[in-house]
Structures are given as structure tokens and as C-alpha cells.
Image (cartoon, rainbow, N blue to C red; front, side, top):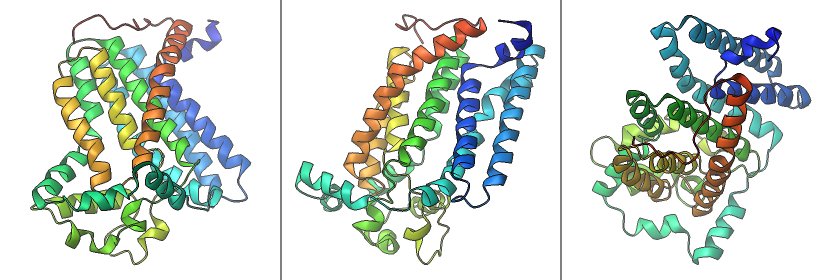
Length: 319
């Protein structure tokens, strides 16, 4: 690579995909600026994010201070959430119509019933409590797998795992534009009666409130269906959890013995707790398959371009 571009070689594959996605967001804001409120602010914030990623990657990989290298991993956690919020402000002006009825019709065609209504017959406070806790563990599952790989000093595998997960999040965000929807807790059930119809035991109410806040509907919002995030299809919870499970198996990480059962229950919880239609889960599976098929190719292409170790696609080592 020419010397003028040597700084780019400091970028890890996940930095590259972050920068690429934020360039995409800048283009989106520019192209549809007449429809997006505060589009200039988003462009400035996206440019600052790109600059931040470049500077962090360069300093962390050049000076190799432990704290910088840790931050080089950790910055992705708030970034995923902040990106999620920007998508919130883009979907409604660009895709004003919801497609819940279309998704409901597919579920009814597949199963002959509304799955969330059917599962309500078997609901129990203990089941609800356990599944709500597991649903709340979503963001921790990728972190667990990444930490296990880093602890085992499997650095290439860890970098690839982080890349694949970030890539997966961004794919799901793009997917939200295809079929914006709000989910069965609003369309097939009474959102305001949720704690009465499906009570937990100790922490279910608190965890629901946390989820609602993340979804832009703080407690007491009078018409939550009007302002909730349109993030139902594909199910990001399903997609990312399946990516994590798949990678834990392919990498033969011992964390798989925890991630497989917990991840499976988490996916079931997305329907039981009325966050998703079943077709959303099927969409998540399709997006996951695309992610795990393309991610190694992109990762190795970037690694080869920047002179970094490439990934052994068959993952023969013990984790």
C-alpha cells in the first residue's frame, strides 16, 4: 500500500465497517435532506464519528498502550446504541408506512393463528420473569464471546467475531427500512395492559421499562405506538444471537455451552414477550446466513489489503 495510505492499515476490519456504514448514513442524509429533520446535525455527528474512529485506531495500533487498545474495543458498545438511535430518526421520514398487517398475515398463513396470542395461553409469571431476564441479556452475549476469545489470546478470531457482530447490527439496521413495523405488543395486544396480562415476579416491570426507553418510549408515553422505534423486521435480537451462537460453535469456544441454551431461550422470548412476529425471526435467520457467509470474505479482504493476519475459515483450534 502506498505510504500516503499507511494510516489506513491501522484500521481493524470492524473500524472499516463502522466508517463505511457512517459514510452510508452521510450519503443517506444528503440524498434525503428535504425529508430529514436536523440532517445537518446528523452529518456533522457522523463525520466526527469517522474522525474519532480513525484517530482511535491509529493511536491504539501505533502506540499499543493497553488502555487505548481496550478503548479500541469498547467504543463499539455505545456506538451500536447511538447508531440505533440515528436510524430511529431516519426511518419514519423515509418510510412513513408501517407493515405490521403484512407481517401478521404471513404469520397467520404459516401457523393459522397469531403466535403471540397462542403462547399467551401458556404464560406464567415465572416463565415471563425468566424470559424477560434472558431477553435483557441480549447485548451481553456478544460481549461474553468476545471476552472469552480475547482471554484465550485468540486475537484474530476475536477481531473477526467483533467485526461479524458489528456487520450484523448494521445489516439489521438497513433491514428496518424494508418493512418498518412496531410489533405485536402494539397491534395484537394492549401495550398498556402488558404488566397486568403478563406479570413477572421481581424485575420484569423494570426490565420492560428499560427496553421501552431504549425503544424511545419512556414510561407514561400516551401514544407509544406513534413514536416507538420501527425495528421489528428483521429481528435483530434473533439475527445477532444466531451469529453469536454460530461463531461460538465454529470457533469451538467453551462459551457455546452457555450461549446456545441462553440464546435459544432469548429467541423464543422475542415472540413470547410479544416483541416480534415469527416472520421477524425467519427474517433474522436469513440476514444471519447472509452475514456469516459474507463476513469472512470481507474480513480477509481487508486483512490482506492492510497486511493483517487472515482468518482460517475452518476454525480448527480449541477455544
